[in-house]
Length: 281
Image 1 (cartoon, rainbow, N blue to C red):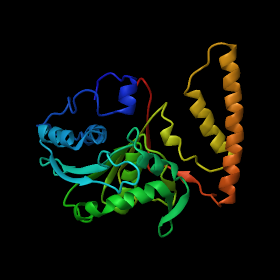
Image 2 (spheres, rainbow, N blue to C red; image 1 turned 45 degrees about the horizontal axis):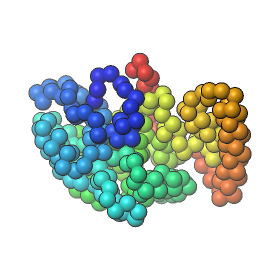
Image 3 (tube, rainbow, N blue to C red; image 1 turned 90 degrees about the vertical axis):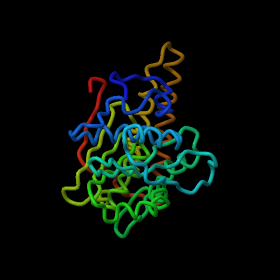
Image 4 (cartoon, rainbow, N blue to C red; image 1 turned 180 degrees about the vertical axis):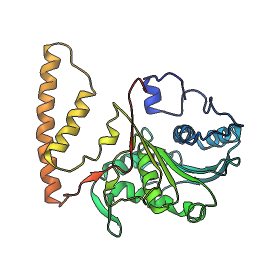
């Protein structure tokens, strides 16, 4: 990861395309750098599988398993994640890839926002629950009775899947980056289960799905999206944005009525403490 944050589109849409990985990594370090490792592993998950294996070998990590879900729409897509281990500390990492640009299966997982009972008494977003269940099988031999420290991690969509992993395998710590809301407060992690949730100040992903599917929360989300587009220049652009905001308010009202008709009266929440990042760190 670069020492100085940048804002290039290539880094936003293709996180693994730019620069080497683990530049800061000290193979002989005895300090607990698990969160730095988690951040870089979450970025590495976007890379092709041969690159993942090469980078893990370079820092002395063992590549253990590939995680792949069914492909309905995207025949040629990267793996959904992987398992690796640091042989020096014995720490096992379950790493989940975030949304891949142009991957229609990932888009579908993000758009299936209707609440479902995923486990008895536990309400989550349908797309995330369905995707994780397709990945769960390869995780069981490693995570049901882990011999040592285990961390589930991921960015964006990967953070959502890591959250479900930590719920299903409660011995795992959870470290996420820009993760969306996954479920309601019924998605409770065990008491004292370590959770670190990192969120960037300008990232809208942690604000979806909205807390509630009512008009106010949906409109607030739409306003945030429009605010991220920046201030328009000139009277014509300003008038266009005013019309766009009015359309967004009307769409929010329509979406809220659809949600009410379907009985989506659930309140979505994030698990664990928040670490909020701005451009000053």
